[in-house]
Image (cartoon, rainbow over all chains, first blue to last red; front, side):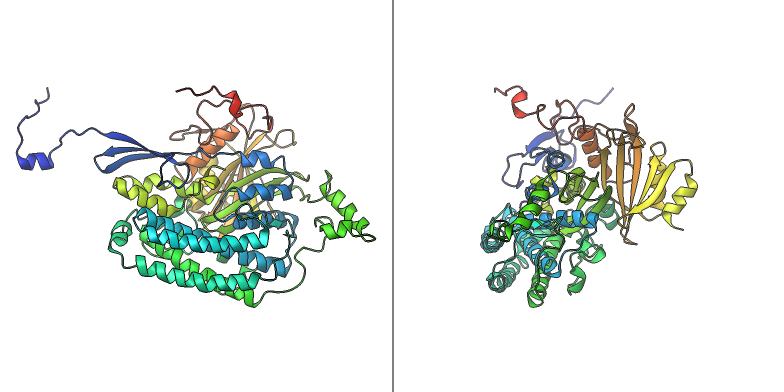
Length: 412
Length: 160
């Protein structure tokens, strides 16, 4: 028989004893300003403390993998834009590299250099927004506005180069849509000067900020081996002290020719992730500077008429258009064009959020037989309950913004 | 000893073939002892990260079985990758779960169950990940049409 519950308690008993508070279930999302996307978490709370957190995803599932089985390889590039919508150029490049690896072709030096420059610009766009949103969620709204100014500049550059701000679709298998415009270097140089000043300002505001430090230092630390087992990659893994970066571990697109530091932090908490992103942006600026200094000339497409999409001028100029027209026709007819040999390939690149992998199975036709994306956000978000359970509810927001989950890539 | 060679000698009756395509090594195995093979690769071979887990539907492709569950493994220390492929028959699409070996496995396995319809034995909570829970069918299978099923207008209208 259990003892009857005491009705009168001393102050000490009341403070330390079990008051029998009810646990509360809170729905965090899918429409919540701090989730930055359609993410839903079912949180079981004991007062302020998180007992259990269960993420529910799939609100943005679009069936990209199924759709792509019905698209040709160059059409699939447009699908990759919609995945990580903060840095679509990295997805474009990653996909094109996967198909090129499968076909055993290598992009021209100029094409590779342009790809690297645009990838690094996208990385800055992604990281700077991530830092801005992390600061905004913790109360520093000014930082977010500063980062949005830089992001606008970057989008102006992307628009100038690709013709679109978000849905860039810039790469093709074996090349690019078009060469960069003549004022590309000037625009990027102007941006780099301004951006490095903004990064200084962000650091000036946040590095000594009492509130920001209190809410991020020591929040959700992840040990090395746990991070590896969770499959965390990119900034989250490097913040734990694991020096793994696909750009160094498996250089692609000529990254081995550029000097940059592989940045790691020690603690693996939200503060380390912020520091790491800021330091990586500076490294990206260094890489862009090297690319612009040594930008090679020459063609942007490989010299292989079977896969090159002929430019419009090769088709409709009087007198010289017949050959281009034939290649264009062959390229778009079924059974010709980009047809990788039978087999399968796993190719990965370093996207801003981590390792972006493409697992392609080809049956020798013009369409991928199976196209699997390894989204870095899926594996980062899987570790979210591990990071937040046992902590405070307010830390859930701080951790989520430090992970930089992109719902389009998470759900595909 | 090379981890793949070690797997080949220890699980001689399980390994169907090994090789490399485009410079990437792969191992084809039977599904029966996949958990033991992965455990050996993780503990003795140093493959401490399960980068990705997915499945492929080889319908009418003349393969050994219809489905293949693909494990992309990576060793952070040695910077090497390998790909393990376990064949799963159409009549009984089940395989042992890798959730107790790698923390990255549970959601990936839920996704495979959701979209491809392969059951993972010993999974801590196998339910749909991407699609709604009342969804019927597994859309990434090759015999599932691209249009005509599961579109928005086919669901009952939500009237509060």
